[in-house]
Image (cartoon, rainbow, N blue to C red):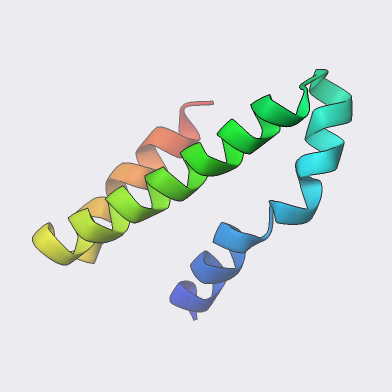
Length: 68
């Protein structure tokens, strides 16, 4: 169940990009770079998860995400 929620959360922000653009005053280039940065983060953490295991990566992600 948690994996399903994480997969959903990874794709959920996509429809919000135009709202981010309007709210934060970003241009199309900045929103595109934001999306590519998100994709890069997902690819890195996915590979890292394959290498050291999903639990440490998930815990580290939750700790980083909760700092905001």
